[in-house]
Image 1 (cartoon, rainbow, N blue to C red):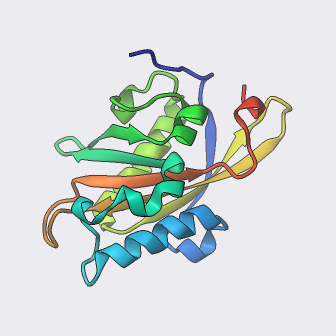
Image 2 (image 1 turned 45 degrees about the vertical axis):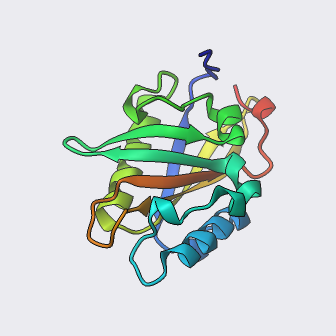
Image 3 (image 1 turned 90 degrees about the vertical axis):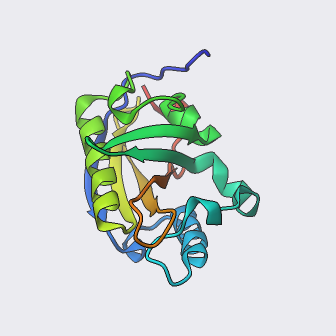
Amino acid sequence: MVRHQPADDERKLLRRETDIAAIPSPLLRQIHEYLESKRGTRAVPAWSDIDPAEIVRLLPNILVVTVEYDPLRIFYRLAGTQIVEFRGEVTGYYLDSVPWNMPATRMAVQESYEMAVRSRAPLFAEAEIRTIHDTHRRIFSGIWPLAPAPDAPIDRCIAAEDYGTLTRADLP
């Protein structure tokens, strides 16, 4: 498999939020509303609750990961087409082995997954990316943990990134 490898992915984490209302991303709000509708009375939905046919237009911005324990590691099972365009193909990689992520980016993303998994609650972030024009643009992301049963460990997460008006041509 040929993997597209973009230039080093340097993102500066600006903030993390637990309240979707604090994040100005209609895309993340749509994903959040969908997942909230699927969880029912449980703290988190299960992977089996998710029907990709119901969220086709959101899929380009979605990642599906498996959560492994002892130590906690994130394995990318699936990356949407827009994710691949901006990050390169991460499907089949562990987060800690994506070769083009800068160490600071890798650590911030790992910490975000750890927080979402441990809290069993969604987590949202705002980050800044420097463009080739030496300007800074904001991107927004979310992580939603999933568990197969109410008391079961988190086994997967759905994550998403909203790049707004940023294009791949803006990046180094």
